[in-house]
Amino acid sequence: MHKHDSALGVATTPVKIDTALEIARGRPVQPVTLVRPHAARAAARFFVEKFPGRSLYAVKANPSPDLIRILWDSGITHYDVASIAEVRLVAGLLPEATLCFMHPVKAEEAIAEAYFQHNVRTFSLDSIEELEKIVRATKGAEDLTLCVRLRVSSDHSKLSLASKFGVEASESKELLFRARQAADALGICFHVGSQAMSPQAYVQAMGRVRQAIVEAAVTVDVIDVGGGFPSIYPGMVPPPLEAFFDAIHDAFESLPVSYSAELWAEPGRALCAEYASLLVRVERRRGDELYINDGAYGALFDAAHVDWRFPVELVRDGGSSAKTLPFSFYGPTCDDMDRMAGPFHLPADTQAGDFIEIGMLGAYGCAMRTGFNGFTAGEVVEMSDQPMASAYGEVPVERVRPSNVVTL
Ligand SMILES: *Cc1c(COP(=O)(O)O)cnc(C)c1O
Figure 1 (cartoon, rainbow, N blue to C red):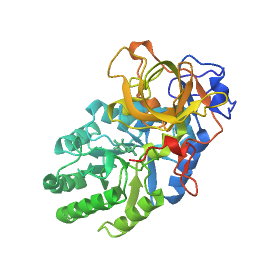
Figure 2: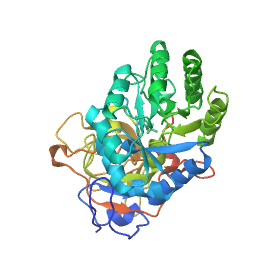
Figure 3: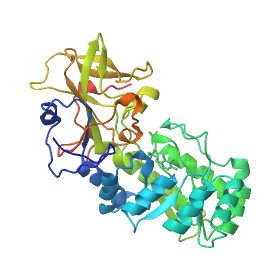
């Protein structure tokens, strides 16, 4: 079939395939990653054209070089990188891109290499310690954009990011004041948690931002609303992204910031969830449990560990007329934890030898694969068909049959 360079989604063949069935007919033994460049292009253009500010791609969601080039070609010029490896990756791929090092706790060596070798000027921080580290590592540079990360609630999001990072309300005044003195441009950033299901998440966080600015009485040049923009999954159909953009725009307009202040966002999931899906094979059926050839240590970490549900579709010649049943999945490793509870709704006659397409794995799916127990990804194939769900049509489209969509 088609050759590939790495498990991250570098398809080397220009041949496009129209349906997953064409691939299933070749009976691939390893899971096949199906990539849809047109879906990533549509997502990028949507953000570039409609977000009322600048969109930085959060590289951790999917660091595939192919994807990063697609986003660049579609107008994404800024990248949120969180490790020195991500800095090197994007600097190597896109020498003209602007990189923003948005991890609030960095190694001093990483800051120095980013600043002196890769021209990184924007850094985030959430403590005085980190501020001192940045000043030391950049030898007191005077051209820094420093973004102070505030702790905000994750109440509206499916995955919390509220515990680990972000300065507390009681400490933001001093940190903003000190960062202002060290920075050429001062920013405030936050992250409402991933897969935010309501624009209210951002409105509330902007309330925190307002309070912090007023208390510290500093001039702020950048407001960065972070990631969290939702995609469509079974049981999780969010309001249209425009509703999020409008709410953010209104909140930004009413903040006491300098008149030339910039608005930034750091979408990860929303730019790449629709980019990739996975074609897996059923190796065994035990009652309502299907043993498939990818799992928790592969692209299905979230399905196993945070009970995320992904859309599924049986890929079989002639299909099936059986009614659907709720199934759970076991992955290929010898570990009991390699289990995805689902439920995944598939035809009742699904059996060993069948292929299943699991959709919406472009974000935090392919990116989290390990080689544990010797199970690795197979080929990467470029597809021309539509992703299983899309937030970027006129109306959100779901390709899956309604019976496959579980509504809570
Ligand atoms: C993970 C992360 C993002 C991307 O979040 P999504 O929910 O995927 O949009 C953006 N910014 C920071 C700082 C992150 O850690």
